[in-house]
Length: 271
Image: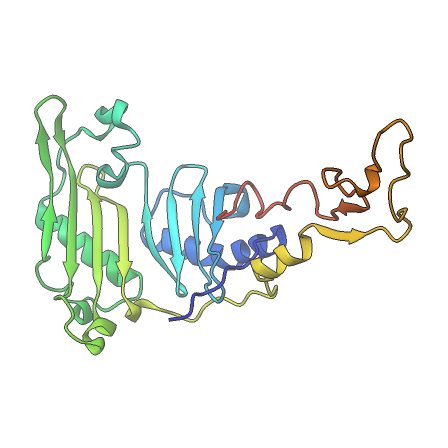
């Protein structure tokens, strides 16, 4: 299988991709009632990492409020918030008390919230088994040192595919629910069936290999260099013919910039 080449990420391409993706992220946040000002604009983006594979329109996007989104194949494939115990606890290990609370809904209500959220995103729960019981659940649970952690995960997964056709129809879906706030705080949607038309990007990125070729060091031989070094009469030998004397009639120059150009708007880049 041929290896997919990488593209060179420039500020212009990164910014164009961000502009194309933001409406999708904004719609997702609105549909799931996330506590994020609408519409989401570039001023709310703290970091943006474009995908580097040729032909791949995707990116990871971090907002300044620490919400994180993944966009691939024309849809928002996942997000997490700083209130998602399952995905963020490692980053807030010294402040786990922030996840302690009480249940203000039952696990069945949390499962229904996950189903409703899946439907709000435009998908049919019945087509992915989401109308039935989850294949796996996690939480809520009690921590002996901290107390009750009211975070619940509902997961729906297709059986292990045994053919290419089954692989095309396979799916992995999970929703994380904050049972105290009654809020979806994390999500992952993985399936080729979720794919949507990709946004159009007006800028055609250059291959990284072509960029490197254009900016590599260029060596040339000076045509006005003397044919050989003049002999130093103080030496008992002809230096121009001595095998240990370096030949200095070539010069290495480079027209490459001292550093690569920035690869995205505000820090942004999937470099």
